[in-house]
Image (cartoon, rainbow, N blue to C red; front, side, top):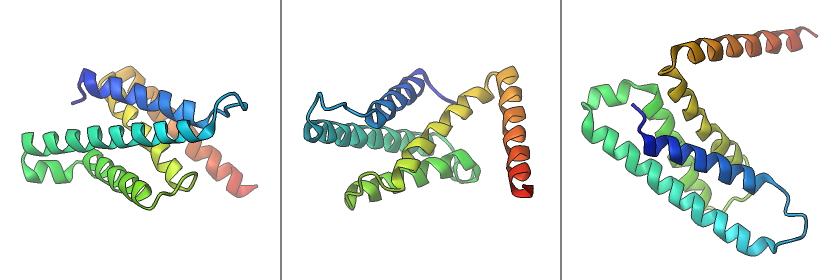
Length: 135
C-alpha cells in the first residue's frame, strides 16, 4: 500500500527528473546543478531503500519476495547505487531513473477505473509494437 509520503516522493522525483532533463540555456552553471541533482538522487535512493526495508519488516518474508513490485524497487535501488558508485552520468542508468516512476502505476491499481484505462493503453502500445515489426 502506498502512503501519502510515497506519493509525494514520487511526485518530487518526477519533478527532479524533469528539471534534470531540461537544458539550462546557459543561464546557470552546470557544475552546481550536477552536484545538487547528485545529492537529490542520493536522497531519493535513501528514501526508497528505507521504504523497502520498512515493507520487508512489516510483511512476511515469503509475501515480500513474491511481490514483483518489491523486486522492481530493489533492482532500481541497486542500479541507482551502482550508477552513483561508478559515477555514470547520462548513461543507460537515466532510463532506470525514469523507470522508477513506473511505481506510479502501483498507485493506479487502487483506482480501478484508471487501472482499466492503463491496461487498455498498455495493450494498445503492444499492438503498435507488433504493427511496427510487421512494417
